[in-house]
Amino acid sequence: MARNLYFVGTAGSGKSTMVYAFQLWMNSQGLDCVTVNLDPGAESLAYAPDVDVKDWVDLDTVIREQGLGPNGAQVAAADMLALNAKEIADVLDTFETSYFLIDTPGQIELFTFRSSGPAIIDAFGRDDSAFVYLNDPNLVRSASGFISSVLLSAIVQFRHALPFINVLSKSDLLSEEELERVVKWSLDPIALYEALVADAATPKTLLDVEFMQSMETIGVYRRLGPVSSELMFGFEEIYNQVQQTFEGGEDLSKD
Image (cartoon, rainbow, N blue to C red; front, top):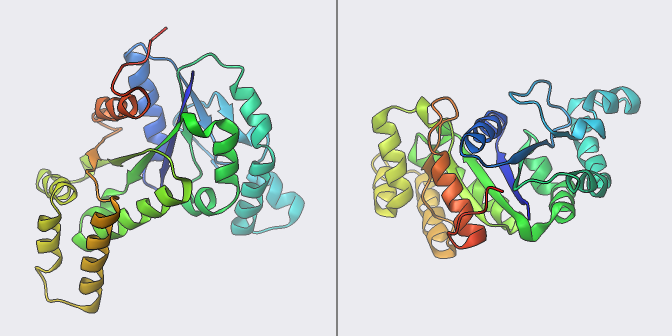
């Protein structure tokens, strides 16, 4: 039975690059996977997708035929993607593989708030799906930005209600000191609280603290696993979390 791994994150968080790097890593481990591009506006990808949504919905065609601007065309294309979800799922069924690595649209709100996201997930198989959420290192560098990133990931998690693997993408862009600090924040709420109040308190600081306390209460405050597609590290931890999610820690067969 194939598992669906959706790579989700804000524009520029490194989803496409990570899909490619994770594909290379899985292949190096003798694990079969199939790549799926769900972004109809993707102009260039680091990998050659095995299944490409542009075969069904192409952004340039939508712009030309419907006379829409880029933003309106993205919305229209997302809705068209929902209409084609079953047909795309039928194509996926023709593959014999263990994993589908699914590259979601760059505009996270389209996949999260439009009907296309849930429609795709349901058509592909909700019970066999999990999210790999990419937190942008440029956002989590500051304590307040860290809170914002966790809030955004929580919104995505609540919207889709799927198992969630939280990673810090492009972690090689952070200095060793910054990386250590960010990971510590994700493990130790007290350390994050101290960082938040280190500067003079503002109304936003108080709001950040309240958000942090709420995230602890509802259980979305969790460790960020550092990953680098450039340096090819962190993938084993992602894979281990996938196994824990689907197999209770038992490795899937490579056959």
